[in-house]
Image 1 (cartoon, rainbow, N blue to C red):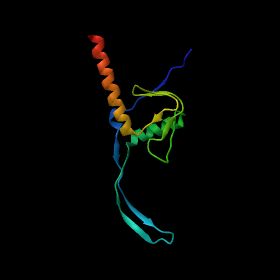
Image 2 (image 1 turned 90 degrees about the horizontal axis):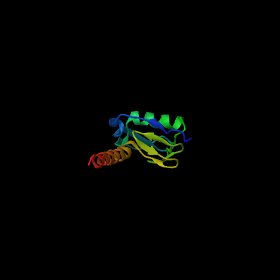
Image 3 (image 1 turned 120 degrees about the vertical axis):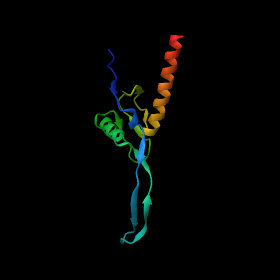
Image 4 (image 1 turned 120 degrees about the horizontal axis):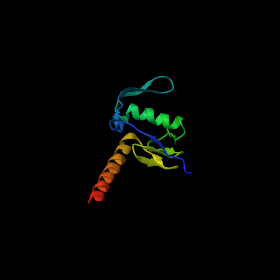
Length: 116
């Protein structure tokens, strides 16, 4: 008998990025300031990050912190209806939002075809 796939759910509004702005000071080895100023960037929504950390802690993904979109699925699961197979890539929140859009559009088209 095949085991059922663990299903995770997250509010759709959390599949996004948020601003990650900071003031940065870069010093050399003798503490002389080389450059300083504002740094502007983005990061995953904090709730998505919490889920990502939970998935890692429970053994579903391996987080790669050295580069973006490097996480790998190590145990199959489902997130908001999207199935992730072993060895698949687990992308950032914004990329997953695009996958969810495609998934939902495909699901809607299938419902329309079945009614026809």
